[in-house]
Amino acid sequence: MFHSHTQPWGTGNAQAWIREKYGPGYEPVPYKTTFASFDYGEFAIMHRIVARRVDLYTGRYTLKSMPLHDAALPEDLIFPIPLRDEANNLDAFSYHWQQLTYAFKLPSPADFPALTLSDHERALLKQYVAYCRRLAKYSVFNEKLGSLSITTQHDETYISATLPSEEAFTAASATFRLINNDGDEASFDKAFKLLNKTLQSETSSRIARGNVVLSAWMQARKEISKQMLETYISRKLVAHKEIDKRPPLTFSNINPSRLIRDFNYGDTLHWGKRREALAELTADGQMEQFYKYCVLSSMLSLGHLYFGFAVTVEAALGARR
Image (cartoon, rainbow, N blue to C red; front, side):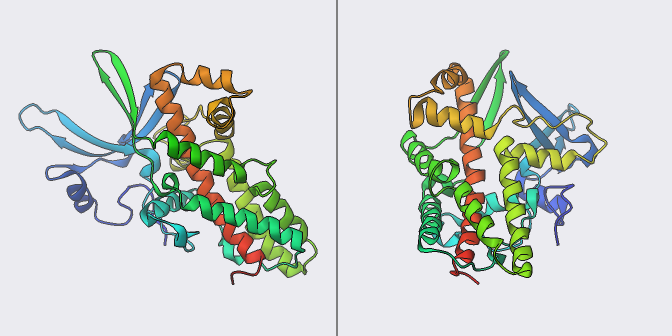
């Protein structure tokens, strides 16, 4: 059973959840009064205000909030966490898969049928899986990614983010590119096209079974390549609500595919054709923190999706049932 997502405590007791998280004296905030955007320049983060405490002497409220995309959790998973055997921090894997599950309700990747494949095709698919399993061990992909905070003091706004080391970021970017870049020989795109083409030679029932998996996973990849997963979740959470007519603003100016290219070919992997675009994005130290947070978050969302597709590839290879 899936949670209603009108409250971050899911189907549990609201007061107990709030007391444990924020301490005594706080109470739940009615759902229809709880959306707020924190804006700075060209970006904003939509928050869900979940609890409040009143000062009996002044009548002033203290509010507690969380990013709207985190208010969608907890989410019940549909299938086992992909590549969990490679995880150093299963809680982090679970966090990313709860987000992906809420967003897309993907079918089990292990439901894909085994295919008849040539040695060359098997080599390509095995390499894709090898890259995914390698990346799943990296420290960056075993973290939830530290919070992005915006504070204002004396009319000055400050952005800070807890980010991995430059060394960890560069290593993760290099291996991630091997599966994310459509032109690479063992990428998600190449593996997907190979499975899709080979599947068409199977029986009609196996084709139908495989198409259910392929179409859903490709659609999810398209969505979080053009908008961040946080944006997609925020839109989904408020799309049918009358309380807020505006489009959700969380990271809505970010195109993940373009931002990843800007970092990869602007400095991280090559000082290449995107260097001017990256220099413009990072000229302001505050915004550099923001954009680096966004590129990392985009890599994490796409990376964990690719880990899930690795299970599909293993099923096609006959390695899973």
